[in-house]
Length: 239
Image (cartoon, rainbow, N blue to C red):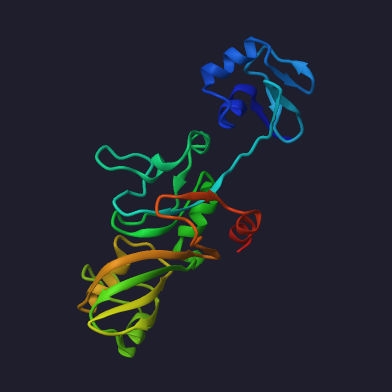
């Protein structure tokens, strides 16, 4: 049994603002288990009680899980005084859950971004102790070699003296401009770019394609998002 205020449940489920919800309750538009409610602070069992508002049954969800194909030129934040944020791309219904991006993608990096209000899952996915893979497709100005693959496998010494955990560099093509898939288990500031920079090369394009068991939905255009499927949620929670 889990009890929550009626107005909070309705507001969280996108019925309206807290003020609007209170007016609906006062107007007799809300029933709980067939009984008209007139007190917006009435505690309901979100798992068992039948809540009807305006003739529509309200099914409560505590958490939401979204994957977005993050576009360039937006920051991975819930609020920024100067930049556009990825949360601004969400509709009102999903914003009601107060979700946040799990980790940050640089402003000029695109690709898979998990957005949720599940704090425990976010912590687990970001903790280096959990060893969750984050895979990126990178375009690199410079010729990649097997020696670079070995260096990544040992971890890279960055310019500030930090030695990264072992990472995987899989060369897709090598030339004056190379392409590679890079997999890390950390999330240090500009980490992939700094690791490549330590090799004397530069990343000119970066796109995250996987986070743990979650792969980027290739059908999503930059800026589009969707809710995770039940199977995707299960894989994340059970990994």
